[in-house]
Length: 252
Image (cartoon, rainbow, N blue to C red; front, side, top):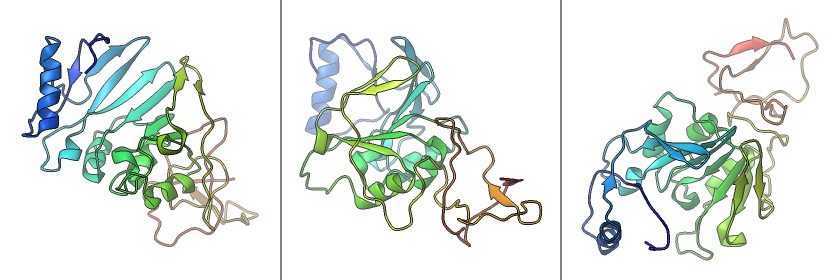
């Protein structure tokens, strides 16, 4: 931990590890006269002109990755979600908090591993951008194809540190400016139009019915977010296994 930066708060999970890297972390915190805080979920911290809210961990897991501290950073109307190394169980706990998870930018968990970035989390966050932090040529193969396919299917613009190096996002509270352009993602055969959908399975038939009163189309209630003045609508055939519980009928 660099002594050149002033740190007032150090946040971590309420458990210890008998590893050299954890011992180094503890020593670094102690060297600055600080102690590790273990805030409860939904605790807020002021951060410059904005704030961030702690989302996890809510309990200590046997999976160290799911003990990552996850936060949602808010600056004006811009929101960023960081989930650390949390995997599917950790993400599920965040989704079950029952609070607003929507964000403009998400940092996919565990460096883009297939064990994280679940559909449920993406459905509740509906990000416009994703920033994947991983080393070029890493031995784990991060980011995994499964994660990249999900981001592609939802039309999320992706930045990757393994291909682009340092990624900088600057928020003025209304818009976000980047130091680089997103990388290109090759879409699969079944791909959405370039707007954002919170549901991987919710598709609208390519040929819409002429009379919506007799052939209604269903879209999800509450989960749809309006971004860039466009509603998220997919093209293609609706999947038979789609769960339409609590959907509302609308005319398009």
